[in-house]
Length: 247
Ligand code: ADP
Image (cartoon, helix red, strand yellow):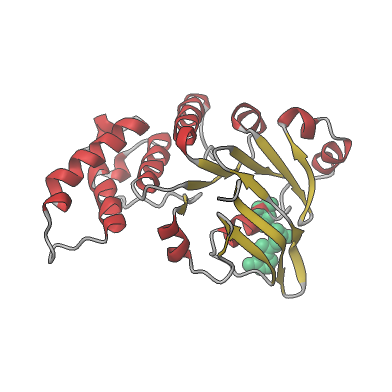
């Protein structure tokens, strides 16, 4: 098996002639936490959307475990184990916390109430859902509606719903956006735990979080890779400092 979970080759995305992503060759090693950083407008979200297939590249290739997924659809790659979370909370606010995870488990198992099987009974699924809620620290909120959750716990629930899909690789789009210090600590611990047996690629603005969590960092600027390496390496790179100062 390839050492790289994700490899992009010459990945390029144009919007009406403007190159938001320009010839990016990104490699994400198995079992690592890899951060994608860079100033606003650098092309991070576009890259993220290309890898998760929410956008189709103008040119270039995307390999997942060595397999060409350039032409795949988002639900295809999700089924292959490449699962993203959304920056805007994607939980169903009127369902309970527990039901949100149950729905995600049902999605993975492809179950429907018309084809009842013991392993997909509500009781069995709810046991699994409670396990996941415990893992992300929201089990005590299980019976509340998701809409009633405090923001940080909602993000934790969102991670639980992505874990319910049993991903090999998790893509997190600004997991710390809008969070206070306590939630940042809680979600950081969660990401470290999640990454014990998975690969994580995250776009994150909070550089102290990036420094604490990431094994490797790719810095994008103007659609191109500006630098790569550990946090110490990229943060002392004059080109990176200049790119950040220039915004
Ligand atoms: P980042 O996430 O690093 O802030 P983005 O990937 O969101 O950067 O955007 C990169 C560039 O591409 C920006 O200049 C942005 O305005 C442009 N862009 C992104 N999406 C679109 C789109 N759908 N149509 C036109 N331009 C876009």
